[in-house]
Length: 216
Length: 230
Image 1 (cartoon, helix red, strand yellow):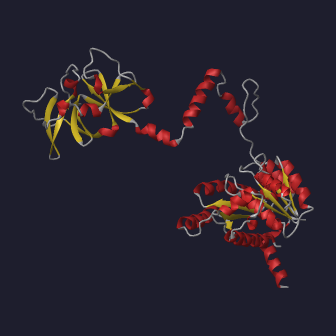
Image 2 (tube, rainbow over the protein chains, first blue to last red):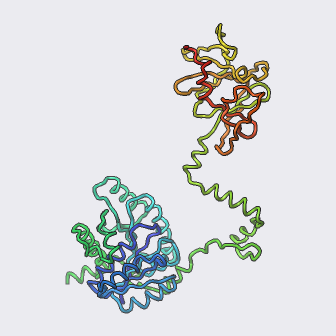
Image 3 (cartoon, rainbow over the protein chains, first blue to last red):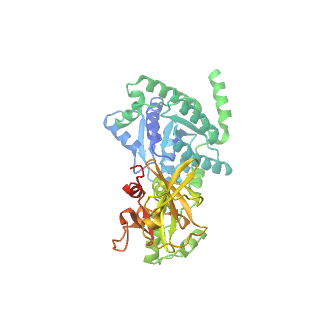
């Protein structure tokens, strides 16, 4: 049975689809991978998949879109049986879909930009994690710092404070503030396929860390 | 071997519950346990079934009430900056004579003084009450009753001097009493009515609340009659 990696964030524009698409493409190089876009009708990940399919780049990757949490659970059940990895891109809402993703995932990634608004929005996710914990449901969540300006003091300070305040652990690898991510997404590419060496390296490090977290 | 050990450590960190994932039934149950959102209530077709819905049912449903509630909701949903702007617009309301109410925008207010030793100055117009020594500086006191030709009343102990400043010029205004602060919005100020019986109408910005004349301090302090250095 494959491993589910959920990508959730209730704040829009935090980089869910950017992370989901590049991660799915990277994992597809290691094994059969499915990407489920649960943010329909926006469907950023699904559109990316369409572009990729048209360019003949899908390889071991399957892309699907689901409209509600029941469809999501049923699709995940179907895909996890035939894939090594299932990446789910959640909606920017704390809806049923987000809750289902959090409970289903072996690893739940929360992309977070170093802005106060995104930290506040994440506090709602933390509440859901606590709620799940009260029901004896473990959620294995990790922050993924995104659009991170490593060299600015405010970003570093906000990063440390947010991790402390939210009580969530972050992955060591951080994604920087780079055009490569949006450019790659818009062209149906993964960031590792975009000619920006720094972006490629930092994303490869993130993928390695995620695989380690998944125990593969 | 090493790899296997590392994997075992990883498993120990993750815990059995995480390793047992995915559990689709639990995921469905947790998703469905989300507290229901407040339902939209169609007027007339409502059946109270919960505390939230009962509260909604108590709201008036007629067209006029809905209009009022909608208006209130819009006002409450205004951006903060706009609200702050509206709050900033305040004036000090004061009395001249027995009945007339005037207002001075907060922006030009400096302070309020008790009427102390007011020294008359010879050869000045009647609307100059005199001067006072205010912190070592001479402050000219303007008698607004004379200026606006308001019937005089005997000066009571409620009389005050309002110190105003506009573009570097400080003046004291002698008034019969200060009522307090009033918050207002520009939209609530109506233009002053033109009337032959009203003197110096150009010094009035507008009328608030149907009876308070908001003074145009710029026009008032720019009046050539007040330019004492000439």
